Length: 230
Image (cartoon, rainbow, N blue to C red; front, side, top):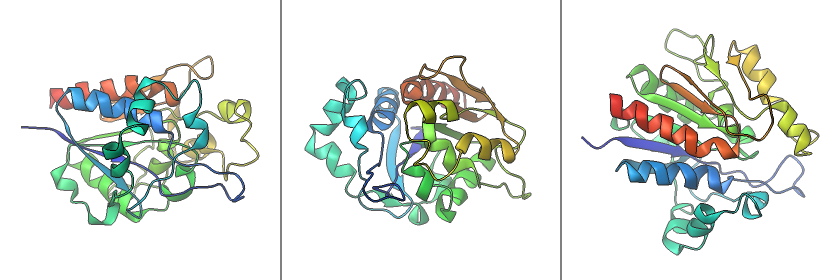
């Protein structure tokens, strides 16, 4: 049976300061999409509110704007998918085997408070599915609780964009909170690579997380392997 996966993307276009644009970090979607596509998985783009997805301007520049991102950006059909994403509230979790949260600083604003995303994540995980994220995508897991009221990430090994990387990216004064610390506050066993901006993936059972944009492909490969084992 064909595996089905939800790719979660943002609807937010700027930081608290409207003069600083942000959005989806495109390669975090395209690298994973290619891996899932190669395995024949059926993919659905979902956002908290549904509809259009803005792109992070910095993700459209070297070195992030690579072959994969350029191919998507230059394909009207693919770009059209980002104009009409499904709303999390309208998705039936039972139809999917996994959920993958993409990043970009924008997700820090609309992922955590989305009841629809929390429901999808909880129901997929409790049904034996895979929950995954890359970079800031783990912000979508911060407030997700299981049916027993515990945080999904509590007591589980995971990673995501590190505070050190926020500082080096010079956005530490723009972001609304320290995601690394927030994950730790919720009981996550947070890990990161010894060096910033290198690929790093953590697998804890059916929770699979990647640290930064260059971890997207490796994260997706781990997700695919987990799905093929089911």
